[in-house]
Amino acid sequence: MPRSPETLRSDALRIWRAGVDAVLPARLVPAAVCVAENILWIGGEEFDLREIDRIVVVGAGKAGAGMVIALETALGPRVLQEKRVTGWVNVPADCVEPTRAIRLHAARPAGVNEPTLAGVAGTAGMLRIVAELGPHDLCLALISGGGSALLPAPMEGFALESKAALTRELAARGANIEQLNTVRRELSRVKGGGLARACRAGHLISLILSDVPGDDLETIASGPTVVRDQNPASAIDVLRDLDLENLPAGREAISLLQRRLGIKHQAPLVTHVANHLLGNNATAVDAAGIEAERLGYSHAMISARQPEGPAEEVAQKLVEMGVKMRSEAGPDCLISGGEPTVALCESTERGVGGRNQQLVLAALAGLEDWQSLAMVSGGTDGEDGPTDAAGAFVDERIAKRAQQLGLNPSEFLRRNDAYHFFEQVGGLLKTGPTHTNVSDLRVVTVAQDQ
Image (cartoon, rainbow, N blue to C red):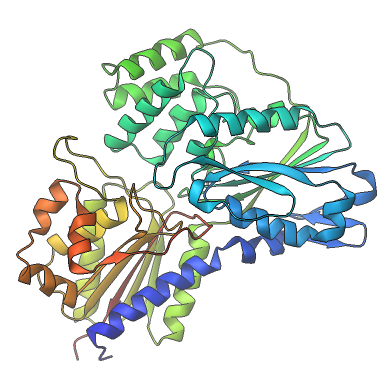
């Protein structure tokens, strides 16, 4: 079908936005939480409100504000008052919104995905709150992507500064989400089921929004409510595989983990725990596909079920599929989701960007002819690296503008400086916080040769 560059770009952005809208907590939470008279349904479980003394809510994640507001609405004023609903949820500073009963705590600055002292204080408060509950209380945990950095409680003997330095270096060396959270989990008092073990409520129900390919509950926010045996050897393997033994924080972590090998000293589980998945990347991809059909496209969809490789490799595959779609009959829209990795160059040369911006820039660097093609890639949370952009987009107009300005995409790519490239050509995708997080969503739209 003939489509102008403006139509391709506009449609790609509309399809991307439809995917994000489908995973907003305002849509997902009411499907999982319902009150009727004295019955409370949560994730398919039924509770008699007359047997519950109080309800306390804790949690962490980039979707925390949206989840809290949606939960308060689903519970309703009567339950909020009668069950003395209170709580504490750690979120990024730019996600703090007005709430009725549950406190949103700014646990880190916007765009800085690292643990902070504010996050440590908030997490300590949560651990105290759940430890004070009783057998007739109900604890609800709201967990979403980004919760690992927002829920810091370093194990005794490992300083927050060391943990932040180690996390920073893991990311710089291209660690995927599973590797990052394996290390975080084993060096934490709250992750890997630590929150569940501290809880003394009769029931702990966790509502989870997944940003992890394959939806491994132990990996999402490092699994604070997923009870598991400690496995320090797994974290040691990751640190050694990424050659972090020579980094001071790496040596310190390995030494600490080695002392815990073979030691069983976890607190017994008191509460009944249930973990319910609200939505994931596939939910967003499916909804984007529905919007693509509505706009007249025939689409192909891919939602990664395991961690993806480097952003440059993912970009190459997407470009190859887009070019093939352009020249052959068949689907004319490609929708994909996942989370690629980015290996950072030396800090002395490094610019500013994020994995979505890096992916789109790699796509532009790998293809000269963008006629009849458009691509958008963005984090569903509205945040891409330490920037104010969710990602970036490219089409024929963007490619021509870069040529007119004499910009070399490959050079910006090498320096991890995609933000400043797309800032100059008008290709940044900016949404602000979306209050959801199911990893990344990419859309390629095509006008096929006739």
